[in-house]
Amino acid sequence: MNIIKELFGNIKNSGDVYLFTFANGKITVKLINYGGIITSLLAPDKSGKIEDIVLGFKSLKEYLKKDYLEKNPYFGAVIGRYCNRIANGKFTINGIEYKLAINNGKNHLHGGNAGFDKVLWRAEEIRKNHEIGARLSYISRDMEEGYPGNLDVTVDYILNKNNELVISYEAICDKPTIVNLTHHSYFNLAGEGKGDILSHKLMINADKYNAVDGASIPTGEILPVKETAMDFTAAEAVGARIKKVKGGYDHNYVLNKDRELSLAAKVTEPESGRILEIITTEPGIQFYSGNYLDGTIKGKSGKVYEKHSGFCLEPQHFPDSPNHPEFPGTLLKPGGIYSQKTIYRFLT
Ligand code: BGC
Image 1: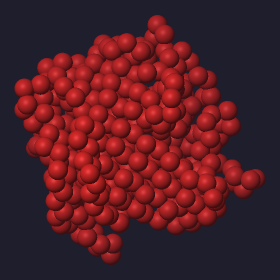
Image 2: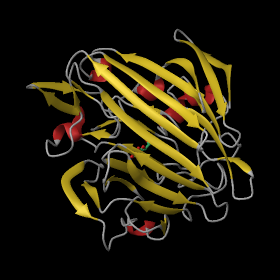
Image 3: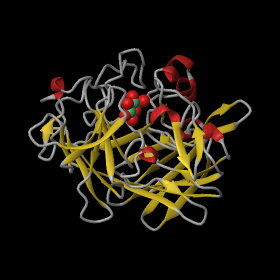
Image 4: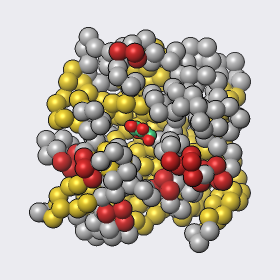
C-alpha cells in the first residue's frame, strides 16, 4: 500500500493542485484536490490486465478548459452543495426564500456555477492499517452560490485491501441549509476510450423511480419500474431498452433498503469480466448513461468521448427534495451532522 503526492498544476489566485496516487497492489486511484476529482482508476480484468476505467483528462489545463466546462461533464468530481436539480433554483427554509444560481435551463444543477467540483480543497494523506487515501476539506461560505450558512465539509477517499474505494462525506453548518453530496465518476469497465457502455450489464436494487418532467425535475410521483425499460431489478444490458427511454437514462431510482449501508447497484462488463458494486447509505441513485457526451471532448487516451462512452451511478438524496416535503429530508441544522458513505467495490 503506497501513496504518492505530486504537483499537478496551479490555479491562479487559488493555489497549487496536487495529484495523490494511492494503490493497494491491485487497484490504483488518482485524485486531485481541485474538485476532489478522481482523474484515473486502474483496475485489473479477469486475466489481470490493468486498464483505466474512468473518463477524464491528463492535465489540469483540460479540466479548466472553457469549452469543456461549458459541456458540463463533471468528470469524477465531488458534487455539492446540492447535487442534481433544484426546480427554478429556489427553496424555502423557515419562511425565507433562497435563490440559487440558474445553470440548467431554468433550474439549478450540481451546486451552481462554481460548485464543489470547481473549488480547491485542502488535502491531507490518510495512512492507516490496511487503508490509504486522502482527506479533502472545504469551507463553503455563507451565501456561496446562494446557499445559506457556512458549511464545513470533509470527504475521505479510502482504498482498502478488499479492493474497495470508500468515499465518506461529512458536513456541519452554522445556519440551517440544504446538503446533498455525491460523486460523479463516469465509468467504462471495458476501459476508458474503449467504445460505449451499452453492453454493460446493470442491476439497480430499486423497484421504483422518481418520475420527472421534460427538464428532469421530479413530478413527485414515484413509479414502479416493473414491465418498463426502467427495470434493472434483474441484470440487463444498459442498451437493451435504452431507445424506449427518451434521451437515454438520466433518472433517480428509489433504492430498496433493508439496512443503512445497502447494495444499490452492480455493473458487469462481459468481455473484461470487471464488476463494480456500489453500496451506499443514500435513499436514491441517479443512473445517467452519458447521454450528453457528444464527441467534442477529447479524453486522456486521445479519443473523443462519444454519447454513452461512460455511465454515472450517483448515490444521493432525491433531486429537488427541498421542494418535496414528502421526500427524505436534506435539511441540515446547526448542531447536526450530514453524513454519506458509499463503497465502490471492484471485482472480476
Ligand atoms: C445529471 C445529468 C447531467 C450530468 C452532467 C448527471 O448527474 O443527471 O442530467 O447532464 O450529470 O452534467
